[in-house]
Image 1 (cartoon, rainbow, N blue to C red):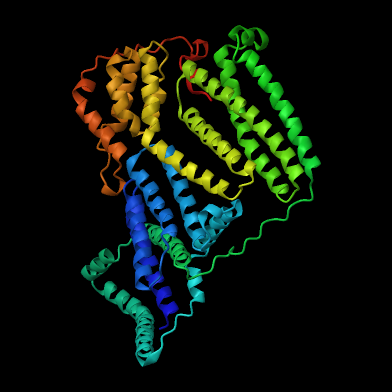
Image 2 (cartoon, one colour; image 1 turned 60 degrees about the vertical axis):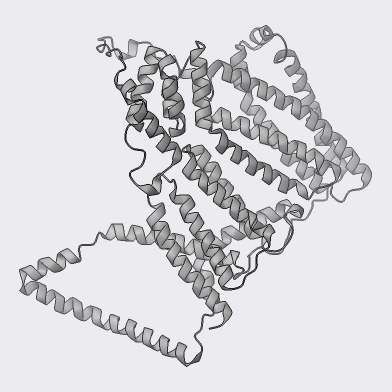
Length: 518
């Protein structure tokens, strides 16, 4: 067997084994420690196959693999679904970078197209999967190989001949003896639906892993190996400068309004638009985030169009872009000020926290844009943006967002502000220790509601299956167990009898309605 055939055969075996392992580990939910365990098994397979077939790795291509494993560990660390989503996204981006880095180009010189190519290559490899093995031309050479093939073919042919015979004779013998019939029926009592479910999950992961291994080990060539960026449109500085200048004027007018209203007297807002200051802040934050998010691709597109322009045209573009960024930073400051007012009035939620984190990352990226693109140093921009994105995801894991939300909202309750116990107890297990420690200081109604909901969700052991173990859920369960006597001894008022007043005439309960409606 030639070297390529051996590698293809070993990839097929590894894919099947990892598919079976994925079915054994990842079938259990909610996902926890099973994700990093399976991820480590996949990465170990890559290293074993690389060593077995003398595939040398450059150290520069190994750090994305470590990043994949780090984000996989996040599944066993935090219980927040949002944090897990960002961890999964970080894993996908790291895999795309890993697959793209195999072509040898240094990461610091990558353009946006190179990252897109990494996504396309890894996605195509996962979709093609084991089908790429069909191109491997796995052949047995020599007398020993041909003899093994003849034996295997004979065994398969014998099984095909035996099956209908066993079916006929077995049916006759089962009809002849009731005990034998019961014994065979019990032995063949197979849950077909469950069997198909296991088979489908195993086949899916085996197929995907085979494609991933073939791409990472350099067996199959990427489908998008040649950079073919789209052709630049025939636009000059006039076509670019006019919209940029008009947008700058629009931003300048908005900044003028912000200085007068948001950074000035709060009574002006109430007199002019009829909204309270907090409502005014709430109304505009997400629109300002959208504006900030749209400016970056606009400036990148303009820079791409003018990449080969003369020095004078580039100078005009950079002046207009710099002015736009200065005004944008004022707008982003307005948005962050609005969010501060918003949280002060209504409390913190996941949407508000993650939107603020996104705007923080966007601000860092815009500063990096000034340092790189506006100075004519385009290549490192996308790499820096990706690395800062990885850092933001890591910081979110470290900050423990749900615990942070619970802590800030309970602190507001201690200061005499409204506390939404229903929302706080709907957070993941990461928030439970904070909520339990704050229970004694909450009002009676909030304390009882929070205690009941915490006990309902977290009084049972966090995991009955080791595959779903998660540090956040285990910690929540231990906190509830430690406070079990206190929770059991709470004296909560007995709910009053249902009023005879028709439901339609009773006033709606709007106590916490505005607190978390984004």
